[in-house]
Image (tube, rainbow, N blue to C red; front, top):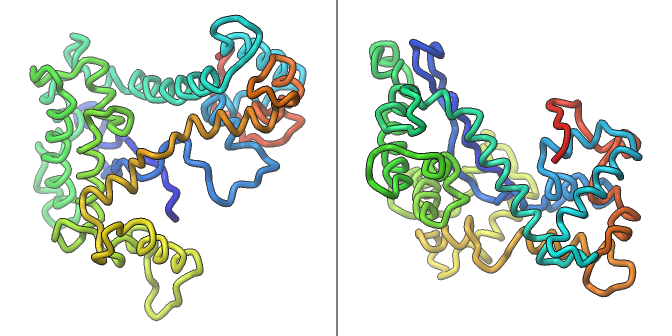
Length: 320
């Protein structure tokens, strides 16, 4: 499908500390965190919960009673109302949603920071990252001679170095927290957008001609079975390619067309979600929300045990 998430899974580790590495899939791809699924069931509100709270916090709320959930939501509403005038505007709600999504990124970096800051100087040098990520491969190349992993490791190492050096704004070959965050989550940083586009092109462009044709575009999301028919959604994606992806109608996507695809400039997901929440909850239609309007429509913003939207509790937080 055209809806997919970017995965920055840090699964390559040094043999000395973490054991034998496994290949990671770390392409940043294609829809932002706030890309609403086309087939979303509007009655579930799960997308709204995750956009408003973040995925982990939404799961926590799903375990609360309705009373506890409403109580926490009231406190959040007070925080969103930045100027304390009793009204939450679309701009204030949008700022909150962006903050929630950004928080996930920084929490992810905090979880892995100590695995890479080997000398504990509060920076991660390229050599530290290379050792922690590729150390086992570099020390034991013979183990990979007869496997397809060898090609993948050889490809990923220079690719990671290129991304690392782009993130290293001061050019000291060592990443501080912000630089390392942009390295792991380039989709969140303007100066990394060219890398996002380039890596997407390299991954999908199987014939190496510097473009993505329709078959390559489809192959990235659907594996053909021998002689099997294409599902309806694949035919829809082919139409999407010709109608909306291939802007100059030459039968393939170039770099700028890929940029337009994965980093659209004309759609702000946080803005769209903020407008959606206001539209659904704004009883007096003044384009703003009061605390009371939010609480009256509380199950759109948050979940609870009573709403049965959640998954099993994986992590508990005391408060946002």
